[in-house]
Image 1 (cartoon, rainbow, N blue to C red):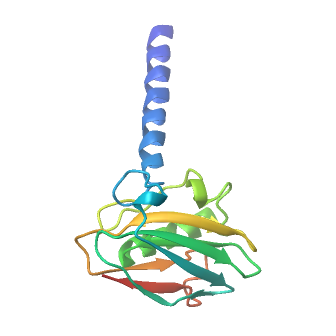
Image 2: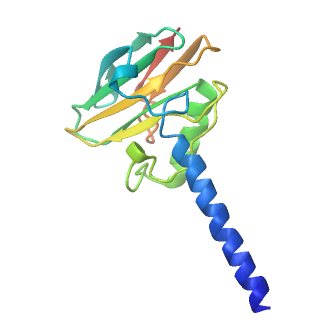
Length: 168
C-alpha cells in the first residue's frame, strides 16, 4: 500500500513538473524560442490607458519578430494578450471565472494560469501591467493567419473597447 501511494505521488509530482514546463513554453513568442534583441525586427510602443489602447490597430508582416513596449498610463491594472477572437473570448471567460481579473503574480511570467489555445496555433503571449509600469513582450507573428487581436481581458475592459486589430 505504501509503495503504491509513493509511486502515485512520484508520478503526480513528475506530471505537474512536466505540465509546468509546458506552460512555461507559452512565455515565449510564437516560434517557441526566446528571441534576443538581435532577433527583433521592430519595436512597437503601446499605451494602455483607462479602457483603451493606442494605437488601436497594427499592421505586422507574417514572420516578423516584434518587441512590444506596453506602457500603462492608466490608473488600474491591464493586460496585453495576443490571440485570435475565439482564444480571446475563451481567455475572457477564464478571467471571469478567476473572479475580479487579478492574476496573483501576473501574466508577465504567466502567473500559472491557463493560456487559451487559438487557431493561430499556439499559446497566447501575454503580460500584465500595473499602473505606471512598462512591460516588454517579444513575439513572432505567425505565417498562417490574416488577423489577430490584442486585448485586455480583465473583466469589463474588452467590453469597454480595450482591444485592437493586428493584420498581416
